[in-house]
Length: 309
Image (cartoon, rainbow, N blue to C red; front, side):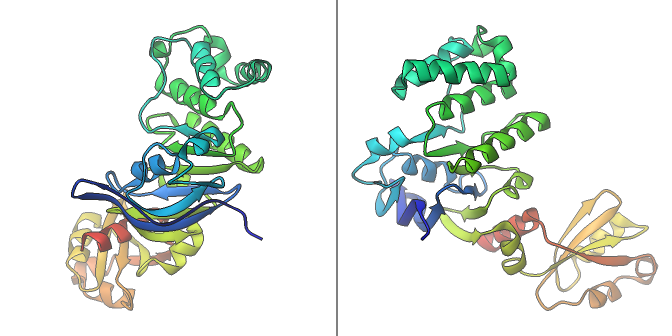
């Protein structure tokens, strides 16, 4: 029997006449890493704030870690961790003082907190700067500290709103190691990100546009079933000219330059041979095309285009 950490039906949030989240329904299984993707302003942060009990829904119903969103939002807060999109630590406190402060908010046992803190300082670079003011830390160290503050009380579920924004690739890799460790311990992870390579690490993802869910499922399955065409790598001696010609060719949905090659997305039921045949002779003689497996970026762009249309 599947156990769900999140179950919501027709969840809605309205600010005046503006509908930020428009009747979304989905489930998140306990222990899975669930990615929530969408452009800026799509409704990601608003959804997270409702699920965390920080914002009352305008309509719909649901449960988070077994508690009713409408009636038991305060109980939800005691069982989850939350790392907000904007930097949420206290700049005028030290690294250690921030950990102590959040431990107090979560009513942690002092001995347990002391043990956790020792583990953090032993296992990470923060041990070298435990007495330094947060304001003096680089972005990557701040984000790491925010994550540790959110997980130190061993929550059942953790919400991470763009946790790796602005951090270097090495720090991003460390963050995802920690996220996978949490999932291995049966902690449910709900994460938003603009890095689509990170979304590949998720067990399932949902894509939201203009407050509505456009797709939900395993990344590989969505790329096979929801991508509305085929993608080709096009090699040519004249990439710029070829790109200009392909953009106006019948049956071509999108063309992007990748160094000296092109990625061309064809519309459904369009054959690449017919597209290449439409090129002028001096370009056609230098062109070869190889079919590619669509990426999440390809899918994201295609669904965004559908929504705009």
